[in-house]
Length: 328
Image (cartoon, helix red, strand yellow):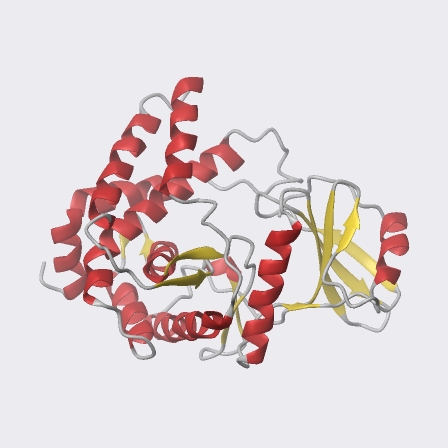
């Protein structure tokens, strides 16, 4: 969601009639994320919209996302709402990519300074309900950020030998092998459609008990525990270490709706480690090595995720389990 392509007001006035949208009042680029060009739209009637332009997603990816959002709406859960075109479509072909228009999703985003255990308990339950709702999704999408993909990225970074990153790809490849060794012990992990990116800035809150997940850009078919692990990584690490009260509250909330299997418990450390490696690597590729200026891309420091990798490796699986259960 960086500003990769200039979409002018004239472009918008020509494009927006494809939807039943009011007249355009203003448009503002959003220099966040790393994949698409996104605009916040203000209409003359006071309503707002969110326009996404992607050149990296296929129509199959967009159809998968549309089915996900439909399943959330059918289940009565908060989430993004696609605005259909006048012809009943879900997106519009433009240039080398596709445009999608969403109704603006209200709510506030929390920060690590404001997050409390009760938020994580509520979020855990919400994530479990999302997993249940997405059990209705019939389409599938292979994980575009799975272990093999991430390992390939790391080998490429190692071959390119970027200054300042010496030894880091090899370190992360070793950590990835450890994560996969843990994950390989499970043969029957429950799988389904996951969000795969439940960061603080991908959840809108309309009150302390009303979180709504959005930005299903990375959604895919994968073990459900991977979603929980990424959420734990994103929300429960602050001040250079994992925060046990937050992690425990997240698992309690999730377990109040969907109980984790024994195998899921056993591989949670490996899933957290893979998530930390995956986001360390993608931040190196998408932000650290990006040539885009700050006004077009809100840069994110890969070292905040590298710190998670180091913390998880230091704990090891046994130490992580003891820590999570309060036995350390």
